[in-house]
Image (cartoon, rainbow, N blue to C red; front, side):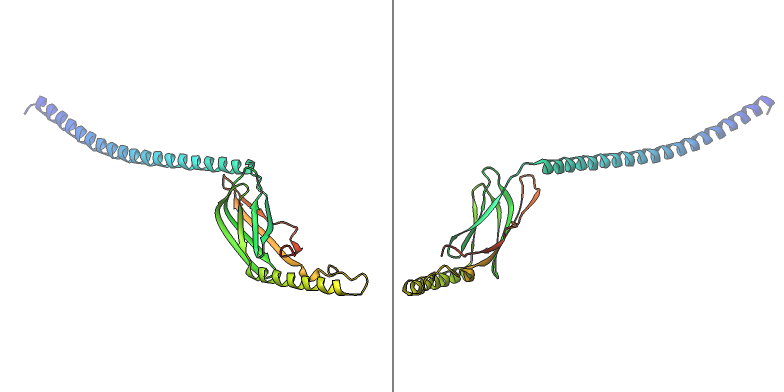
Length: 199
């Protein structure tokens, strides 16, 4: 073998080593590239999720702002409709109350009612059997007083002089939500002593 063959063999060997090293480095580069691609995909997925959360937060903020500036003037009124029949009415001319819960207490008798919605002018009726019985007793007592007063010879005596016994504690409370879901509460400060209906 002459020198040319040796040079050719060495050069070929160096080329083979260089080629093998190139294949090894190419494989490592491909592995790193795959790992980088996987990390990029993960980062993109995280970015998409972050964008979704940001959109949800924006939607919630818009909803909250909408509820805060929403015009919703529901007022309520409560009154006796008959013996033991108490009604609570949505006195608004245009607004509907949603997910309504009404609670009325008459002395120690408590009644509650729930409705999905109560429109303008609509009422919720609550029945108080104890109050109905007591009203009938009070009417009978008042009639007897008037009859005694009519027969009495005492000047200035009147059957209406002592009506304290005909006063009862009535407490009203309503909770509801607006069209946009904002919670509202009605609890009149004027809860006080009153009659159980017309005597």
